[in-house]
Length: 338
Image 1 (tube, helix red, strand yellow):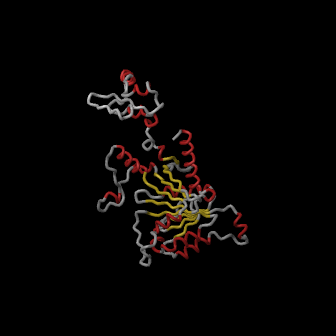
Image 2 (cartoon, rainbow, N blue to C red):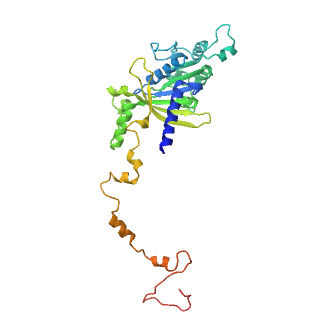
Image 3 (cartoon, rainbow, N blue to C red):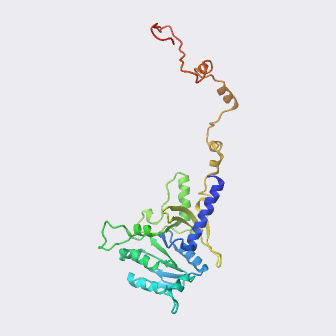
């Protein structure tokens, strides 16, 4: 990729990621975040909330697993134990225009809402058929929904679900306009190092296969950041995919998390020798594939077989065949002259 095209691709990807985080111009009405036990979606959710407060949006937090009200949240709704209908009614009550304000005036107001659902697993396990109803009732032109789904949590479906029906995760992925899959940066770096050394890739948590191990060993590198795999569906149906690094800020009152492409990481960057051509590739070999000046001059002085036929007869002037008869050849007078 040319340097100008690479710079344009990098700038376009970062601007698109920031647009989704800011939820600017209703970039994604339904954003689905997929996390695991090894890397939760907490830093990414907090980034959504912080940017929502900077944009003066009202933040509604629908809690299925969170006990305390998070920071910068305006409305905290406890959803555990409530039916889908009751939950929709309670959420929609906060969208109702104030008394004395007509719906037309409410439509022209600049107040926007950010709805955060900390876990869709209880809803998908209890009433999977109600997911389209739940999303369609609370998403509107002035509200954006950010929901989390835990990949590692087993999902027990009710008996009324037909085995031929799509899985709730498949349904969620189909309805979402943007999907973020988070993973640990430290684990991604260790996996990349193992691949470069042709070693077995390390495993963590449930993938270790050890009895009683649910979460891998935590180290001090966990605070470095997380890898976010973005998949955005445009209105045309085309999907845009890219991988980023989100590094949360450790200082209070800072502007926010720092964003960068995963390809900008030194370990994931393309090798510089690949840009130097064939000479750069042969520099790391244990043998020389090049030619010396004497070998090159000797190769140019070699006369190839039937080289005279190309010069004496005239290359490309006809289809004559030059043939030298041997002792054992028997010339036939009836044949045409060769």
